[in-house]
Length: 334
Length: 246
Image (cartoon, rainbow over all chains, first blue to last red; front, side, top):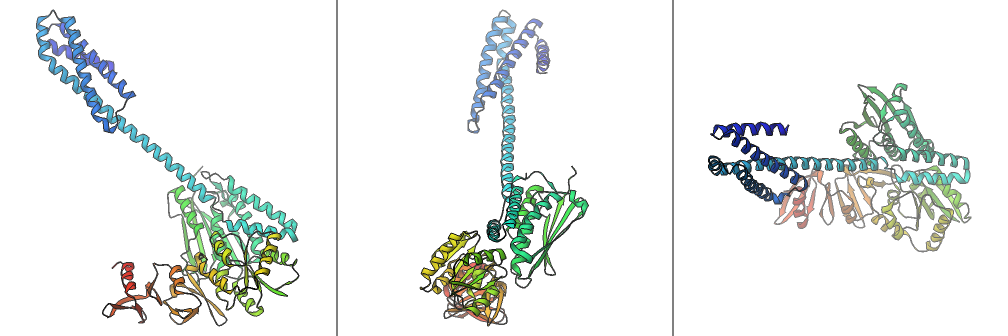
């Protein structure tokens, strides 16, 4: 295509020169030589810019470069054309007169090329920077998600181990069972991939392991009601999302009252969202000063924001002595 | 015979202590408690020589329970994990057992207690309570004892605190409670955006503040919502203006 443009331009120049009362022979040769040289100069400039891009502080180099190529072009052109058409006196006279205009045209072309090249280069550089920044942000996000996901309360782990230690002396079989449950639970927290969602029944299985362990620890004080429709079991949600909420519910429920408590978990599907509610009792007299969201809940909130870019997917309320945490998980068709 | 009370909200954790104690014939377990309320009752009733105390428990934690006691027995803390508290434990408690702990480690704690029990532990516990980093809950409430009645007072209900010899008086709308603490302690522990020390002997709840009034030249008082006037020191006056942003 460039060659085509070049031919068109060469023809126009030939015609213009002929119009200026040069004979066809001189006009064609002049046009071919001048345009050929200009094309070479442009190619040289492009190649050079490919290997060397002056930095922001060296912008003046581009101008110097365009200028020197122009000078080189003018000298070479004059030398070649004199060699070819030196005998034609009318032409030589015309050449003398037109030389400044030729030089200026060449300078304009090269400057234009330089500026275009510089702009393109800048755009490219911007794009690359953007890309790098996006990559870095993605990495940070993933790391944060992984960290939030693996937040495991050390209290839970050490207290469970202590319970196992107590069982080992008197009820070795139950100790062994609890070790098994704890191992399964820990393995579950390690293997999950953040980007993938899991079906609700898988998440519930994991949650049940956790609850079994907590029940051993707290004995009859802790009761759990799980009320999930069968059709909801296939709904998807990010892995390990429920456990921190239930952990929070247990903590607030059990540590806020000395009575037995019941934690209830229920769900329903609606308008493309999986809605999950987790309720725990709390004492409204002593907890009024407590602002509600513990670390567990704020980390769930943060995860939902990082995954769905929304802040309205988790809400909490206090009603009739119950602390209710509600989740809305968008169901994306697979 | 030495009397021991075990206070822990997890039954299995208590049973482990019971099991370990059985190897020490000179120790008798007089009570096992689920929470701090039972703990206070049992300690007042049995006057034990030693208690095993968990920290994270329902309603009131182990530290808050200790604050309610008139005289403190020797304490061995049993806790799962508390990086902040451990420093204070090392200095002041007889010992602390990090769950899960071994029989050997338990025996060592008993041995330490046997060596130390002649020296008074009262002072150590007091300074432990002063120095321990507060659990998050403790910033939001004060646990007080009114006769045999234990109350948990949300910080928002506290109007002001006044120094009273070795005690402080904690004023709410209807009444006040005595607590064996220092003003400096409360100045440190309380949320500085909510509570302000106006004077050597006074800390007020900023929610209750209605007015700063000049009294004489260069002296001021603050007026609370219920009409009570609280003295404001000169340094207090400039700091209060800074806090309120005027």
